[in-house]
Length: 224
Image 1: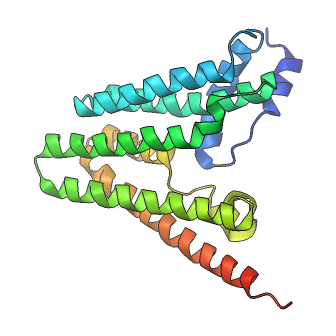
Image 2: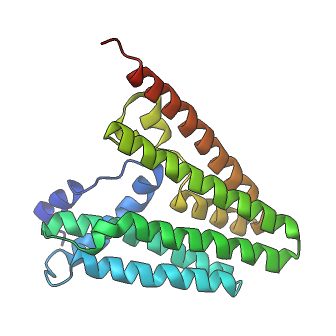
């Protein structure tokens, strides 16, 4: 029987606002509930497991084992939310968490590179290498704008209000790109995923660039 007090507490641990955060939330909350009283399991333990599984996803892409790569990638997305909730639940210092964004970027970029290799291997066309490189460059650009905005303004785009906050709820990111891959794999046109991913990533890059330029222009041209 579910302990209502624990379940209510877990609901208060939610931080992510993105569409994928909401999609992952039910499974995240169940895992956190099961770990609730296992005090010896920390956020760092969950993070280590997540990173090990994440790099195994890259290996599966290299081996063109798409089905298991996508299943495991979806699980990684869920665990990526669990470690943060466990950290907030335990209220303990987390060491790996301080480098979370760097580690996330490392394995995500590894995924995109091996995903590109997988497409090229399966479909024997150099266009997938070209499209994959464009994807990697655009994604790096999106990350750089996001981080630069944070450094320049002292706050994240997702907390800046207005249209920026709405866009960050549906922007291109790892868990969304995995969803693109899953949908096209189910349809039986896995290679089409690179096209919709590029559209999503490109739209995010354009939106972030315009929003950041407008916001920074406005704040740097205020009257004294």
